[in-house]
Amino acid sequence: MNITDIRIRLIDSSEKMKAVASVTFDDIFVVHDIKVIEGKSGLFVAMPSKKVGDDTFKDVAHPLASDFRNLLKDEILAAYENALNE
Image 1: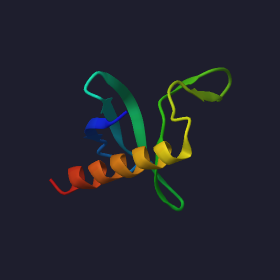
Image 2: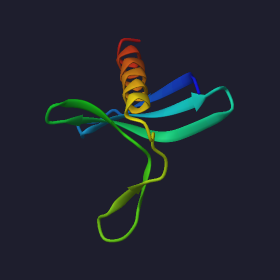
Image 3: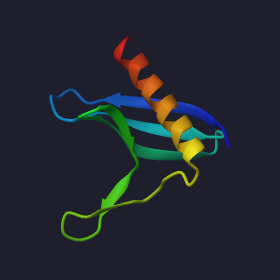
C-alpha cells in the first residue's frame, strides 16, 4: 500500500490542533480527519476517532504495524511543514 496523496487543512488558531489531514492510499482509498497536534514534546499525528462514552475516544482507523505508523506520521508532518511554507 502506497500513500498517493496527502491534503492538509491548516487550522488557524492558538489551540493544540494545528491541522487536519486527508491521506489517499493507492489512489483508491482515503482516510479523513487525521489530526496534527502540538504536544509537550513537539508535533504528533492522531488518528481519526469517535467518542464512545464519557470523555473516551476510540480510533476508527489506524495502522497496525509500527513501521507503517512511522512512515505515515513522517509523511503527514512533512506535508504539514510544506503547507506552512506555501
